[in-house]
Length: 146
Image (cartoon, rainbow, N blue to C red; front, side, top):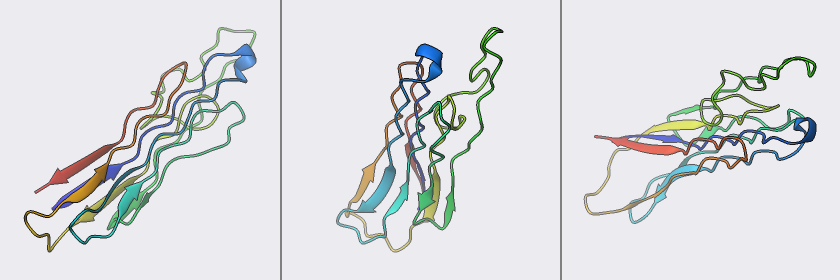
């Protein structure tokens, strides 16, 4: 069985005076772990929420045969004297931008599971998208392929 685990995307920076308030929250971690089936934990952390100061970053994957970080990009910006285009054309959350306004994308991990026993269980957690007063991040996902 091939399993793909993706963390939730961070929420976008919300509107506030000078865009300096209401940071978006981080996306949740998605994972698969042992239930009654013995497997190693495979997880993908959520991306950071959008922040005015540009701190935070993308989520990351761990425990997979293939692990990757979420996609990041600095949001666009235009002079305060001109119409604002903060984050214009960039989807917030998973697959979105990083740092100043938009939330970062969640990480991902892909694992090929072998030796599973029918009837045993695997614990699955799907991370939620980060919250925001502007635009919430997308929820994570866990996909099993057989």
